[in-house]
Length: 405
Image (tube, rainbow, N blue to C red; front, top):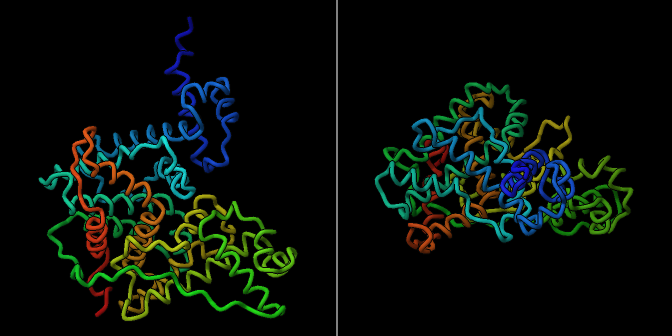
């Protein structure tokens, strides 16, 4: 009998193979036949051991999260702060694919073991129960910031190049700011009562009439915005965009050159609107960030970053970042090349992106942790209170003067 081909070996091979594939491609583009072939096992064994592709994805992600958990909490580390910006475990990207495609919400996915470990570790450090609102909010903040940075690091740094980015200094400042999330000796920059309620997405422009060039381009941009509200760019075809806009398919290439360029233009336009609305009414910088706020823009940016769909020559990989740098440098009276400005923007933007993309995972993990089920030690708590405290904690990411009057 060949013990090397037993159940545990086969399952381990399939999990390892899938994890290798999901480092560079979303689960929707990975077939079971391809996975089984590369693993050197029979296709039917995937269904035999995991029940379905969802089961294999779940097992692979849990295994990856367990490995990251062991790495983060090994060597005497109690809590993974400050953020280590030179690291980017492949598991983050795989989890990002799952979150952005809603695959995590499909059974039989389990709560993230990494999230549970962070709750337990932070509770021990703070000397509080795992159900403490402060503990849960701090963990959620760190979880979002770390995942957001690791997944979007390349996009951040490409976007900041035009501002004479000093990578080393900016990363050092980002690490310093990340430690504020769990430093309770630092007061929040605003009172919790002042935290605004969730803002609506920027208002859509009125329908564009006419058949002239400007009207056609505007309708195409509007069609992209509407179609990407709940779908990834890879799932939306150029023909579908043209049909939604009510124009000929060839006009996409005539005016924009390609579907990808059209999407990039649409995202840049929506980013400008988003930042403009965010700065209205005395809101000089988008902090504290509101965990209830999740415009489609964040998810679209996530898809583009993770799939590499942005045109390689486009310096505005995330136009929100460049707009925020300009706004914050004006607010603080600092040069747009100042690493302090870059670090604050990176911290806030990565946390927003991280929370927007991973909210389902984080809250799914929280819901299980707070369910009071006999299988875990946590008692029930009010998740809405955690969200409110999360906004409060996030205000520590930037300097007080950046918040304005």
